[in-house]
Length: 226
Image (spheres, rainbow, N blue to C red):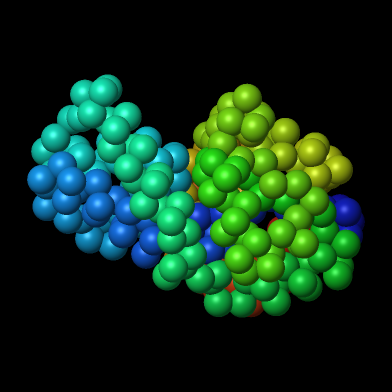
């Protein structure tokens, strides 16, 4: 198999490219306070991220023993989004080494993209804030493919939108949602151990895992030779 040149690499956003959890927990706790529920910890929220704002609010409520009805949930999700959007990158930061690795992979000819369940009006500003948009040939957010991860069609749509081929592709993520999307698309997947998942990345059955971004280029090269 050829090297990185021409390889389509699709990245998850939250917990993979950018540590967005501090701002997400701030918005989540704004909802919890309004609902009269105890605030939730950063550690707990990290395990709830990856399936969109609605799922995050549902999980936070259930963690406090409350199953919001549809009307209440809609109000809480709207409040969450209002608070979150007002301070998208107040505390969020790219993971250490990510910019350098995107630069290296781009220089080697990789076709990079972002496949995220985050809505476009939230995902795009986060990437813009850290000058990351320029590395990606496509950014496909919540609903833009007609389906969302873990449906594999979200991933294949993203790769095709970037100009890449699903036959020469790789998913880089951090959660079971990313792994399932890759498996459903029959695409190899590499998971970060520092992301947002309840189970350890090493236990999820990815093709490979990495602890720091500086490991990723060599890890990809190794996978391509197997």
